[in-house]
Length: 250
Length: 243
Image (tube, rainbow over all chains, first blue to last red; front, side):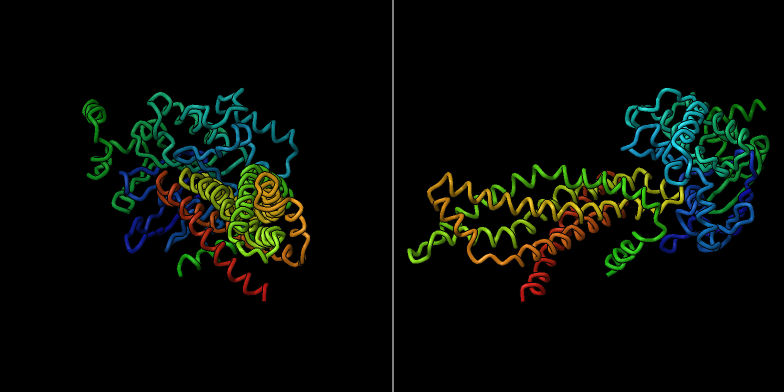
C-alpha cells in the first residue's frame, strides 16, 4: 500500500499541488485524473522520487520514502516499475535488452534465469518473438507494452503509469488498460495510473483521485463518478457528447 | 556561478551510489570503442594535413639564408608534439565527441530515458557519464600520440613531395635538441582536455530541458564551452608546466 499525506509542491512560487492525501491499495488500479496542467504528473513524479515534495509524507508499506535513510529509499526504488508517457525505452538496446536491463543491473540472476523472466514478461504482454527488434522498429502500442514488461520484470510491487494511452488508438488503449488491470490483479501490484482518458476511467478505475487546480477535489470509483455531485468533476467527465448521452441514458 | 556550482555537484554525483565494477568495465569498453576507435580516421586526416601545412608555412617564413633548413623539422616536431597534437586534436575531438555526448544525453533526457534509470534506483549520472569520462581519459592520450606521429609524418610527406626542404634536412631537424619532457607535457594536457571535453559535454546534455531544438542547442553549447575550456586549460598548463 502507498499512503501519501499532505503533499505540496511548487515551482518558482507557483503551487502545482497542494495538500494532497490519498491511499493506494495493492491489487487495485488507481487512477489520478484531472485536466492538463492540474498537477497530476507532478504528483506522480513526487511519488516515484523524481521530484521532492516541500511538505508531506509518502509511505510505501509504512516505509518513509521522503525522509527515510538512503538504503530504505534505494530498496523502495528497486520495487518500483514505471511506464512513461513515451515508453522511455533505451534507443540503443533492442526489446530483449530493454526488458532485461533492470535484471542486469539490479539482480544477481544467472543469464538463463534472466532470459526465462524476460520471455515470461514478453509472453505476458503478448509480444513473443520480438526480442531482437529495436524500439524504432515497433509501433507505439508495442513500445508501451515493452515498457510494461520492463516495469514488471523485476517483480515490482508498485507500478506507475504516466498517461499510458497517449498517442494510441482507442482499441490499443483498451488493450493496454486491460493488460494493466490484469497484471495488477494477477501479481497484486499497487498500480497508479495518471490519465485524462475517460475510457480508462470507466474501464479500469477501481479507485479514482480527481485533482483540480492543484488540489484533491474528489475520490471514489468508476461507479460513483457519474453521480459525484462535484461541478468541476462533472465538467471534466462529461466534456464530450458521448459521455453526456451516457449520463442521460443512465 | 549557479551553473559552476551545479557542474561541481554533477561531478560529485559521478561517484555516489555506483553500480558494480563489472558493469562499468563493460560500459567503459563500449565507450572506448565509440569514442576512441571511431575517432581514428578523423584524427588521422586532420593530423597529416596539419603537419604538412606546418612544414610549408614554417618554410615560407624562414627567409634568412643563415638559418639552416633543418630547423623546419625541429619546429614542426616541437609545435606538433607540444601544441598541435593535443590542442588542435582536442578541438576536433570536442566537435565530434563532445557534441555526440551532449546530443545523446540530451535526447535521453527529453525522452525520459534518464528518468527511467532514476526510477529504477540507478544513479544515472554515474551510470551514463562516468564511463564516458573514463573512456575519454583512456583513449584521448592515445589519439594524441597517434596525432603527434601522423603530424610529423605529414610534415615529412610535405618535405618529400615539395621542394621547401629536403627529407634529409627535415629528419635531421627532427633529431636535433629533443627534450622528452614535451611528451609528458603533451600527455598531461591530453588527460586534462579529455576530462574537460567529456565532463562539460555530459553536463550540457544531462541538464537539457525542452525538446529537439534544445538538444541541438545543448550540443552547440557543449562544443563552444569545451573549446573555451581547452584554450583556458592550455594557457594555465603552459604557465604551470613550462616555467
